[in-house]
Amino acid sequence: MKLSDFDFELPDALIAVRPARPRTSAKLLVAQGDTLRDLVVTDLVSVLRAGDHLVLNDTKVIPARLFGERHRASTDGSGAAKIEVTLLEPQEDGTWAALIKPLRKVRDGEKIVFSPDLSAAMVHRYDGMGYLEFNVVGDDFDAALNAAGAMPLPPYIAAKRAADAQDKHDYQTVWAAKMGAVAAPTASLHFDQGLLDDLAAMGVKFSHVTLHVGAGTFLPVKVDDVSDHVMHSEWGQVSAQTAADIMATKAAGGRVIPVGTTALRLIETAGRDGTLTQWEGDTDIFITPGFKFQIADGLMTNFHLPKSTLMMLVSALMGTDRIREIYAHAIDKNYRFFSYGDSSIFLPNG
Image 1 (spheres, rainbow, N blue to C red):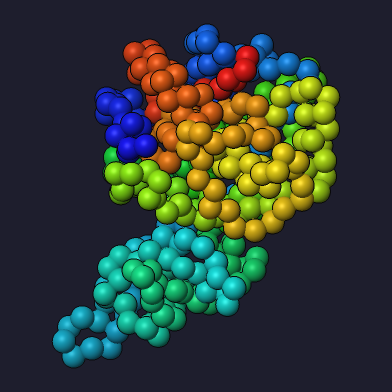
Image 2: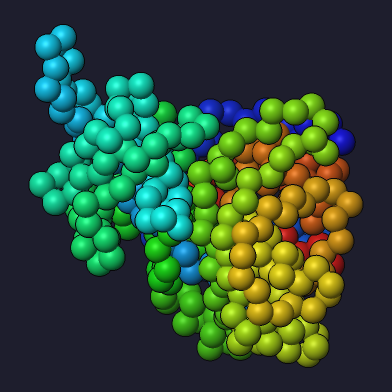
């Protein structure tokens, strides 16, 4: 497979920079078998049925983008420098891996001050990243980060506008619980509590898994031959109860539908032998056409970047030609794309 197989032309005007309001008013493209229907997210009550099982990623996005200064006593006039930091992943030694701009302006051992309550020392650097040790930990770190940080909006939004206070609400799911993601599981942004209650009342079941979405989700594929791509890894967890509940749904003939590619990748990692079991660890599963899905019967997802690994994933689920038809329809009907855009639900077997 070539990277060009997953390319398409997208008008810039269709890239959403703000979400629909209310969340559930976003458009919903339903691809069920060979049919297409143009609905809205609240219409999920007519698409799903009793016994269906939605799998929700309960990761919580941290306000990982920080702006600070480093100060240096220097005779050459370079005493202060503005530093931008995007936190990527906590390390076992308590430090955080981070993208630092400009990295060359910070020496090992120097301190960057983000607010009166939050600062960090550069411990070391490796492979273009800096590793930071913060002055506070635990709940104190969470509180200081929440006060000083901004949401790490995807590059295609950040290029158009800066993150603001509204993004701390918009770029977070209503069931977010476990801090650790630096990108949202964006398909889940379309739900509010009212819709969850309506679906539960009609017999739809829910389970939570955790996959901390990393910045690698935005990395471009740089190889022409897709098989040469090295997939980024992310930490995830499936509880024993969730695994048992999902397998019970499958045994009863219900449909297991992950909300978002993150939840799908995780349950397919944990269920590669056809049985979903308790699981915890790093997954770098790379789903491309030809992949045999063991657990997922469908997928609710946003519309993805051309030539991305997520385009490959949805092509694996629906078929490459079918995805081209779906995306051509979405563009023709002015669906909004990417993280703050509209939604779709794919049910390949009806």
